[in-house]
Amino acid sequence: MCIVTEVRTDRVTPGSQTSLREANRARIVSAVQQRGSLTQVELAGTTGLSPATVSNIVKELSAAGVLHTAPSTRSGRRAQLVTLARSLGLVAGVHFGARSMRVALADASLRVISEERMPLAPDHRADVGLRRAAMLVEEMAASVEAGAGELLAVGIGVPAPVDVRTGTVSSAGLLRGWDGAEVGTELGATFGVPVGVDNDANLGALAEARLGAGAGYDPVVYLRVSHGVGGGIVLGGQLLRGRRGAAGEIGHVTIDENGPVCRCGNRGCLETFVGSHVLVGMLAGRGHLTLADVIAGALAGDAGCRRVVYDAGQHLGVAAANLCNIVDPEVVVVGGQLAEAGELLLDPMRTALEQRTLPSAAGPPQVLATSLGAWAEARGALVVALDLARDRGTLGVGV
Image (cartoon, rainbow, N blue to C red):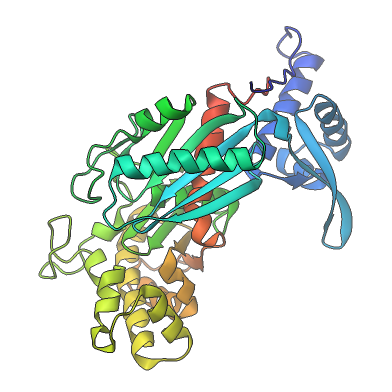
């Protein structure tokens, strides 16, 4: 049974000293929930409260079992690191990729306490994938000795547009075996907790904007370049999903109207130029290669591999420029497996982006590599799960 810690004990009058203190407590808890962990000095800067007020409230909430403090070192100085207490429960994040599934388990401060990666067969079906995800989450919870009822919510990311209202894959033909899959309903019934489902690139965007390379910027555009190509947009701290969850689907932006036919049925989509099968196919004469082989070859100085990565960067820059001219982001974060090529990919992307975006005194948007790596989407799923638990009142923090 989930442990619920109630901070509010009596009714308060708006504008009273008690209501002000509760508002301050809520600000502190919200800041820790958003950032995962902060020092008391960072909490004062984030909330605008005085260090003395922060110190007193942190002591109160630690005694109430809401917050946890531990000694830490920041910039060579001793500090008190503040997180949410483990007793508040756990959240799970699941990311379904084209070839594998990643699952992370975290406490209410978003501190990851367990993570696993499981390979999946190509073109795996939704029912098979969801069963495996449920089993893996249960095994991981058991491995950290989580009690019954500690799991508060689950976030799921899939590489296709999702109707977040229903948790259903909303576009046909983009993810074979998942068309119309009611992901939220199926896993919700299995776990008996709220389940949030979204496009995986959206989750990567959310994670990078809150916790990663995009933190402190707004708007943030995130591009996930791996087996396919996806994108997510965070505007005003919120995901921009559009009418049916397809906002930011940069992989299906047309960059050559006479180009190859894409799996979506259109011609010349970005994905037909930078998808992993396309990049590997450019070096087909070398035998069986994987995208990892191409990236490793490029980093080692192989001329052919470097050319493939360079061209991919140019194509990404052209497509991203169209998106940037509409959204005008401060930063574009690039994730997915191809981002492992680093500056070999990002340099030509920056050049193409600068050439094609509207000139500005501020210059073109920054282009940065993911700081969360291959786990960005799973981290985004954890963020969604924690937000869902808080919004549904299952987190147990009565502030």
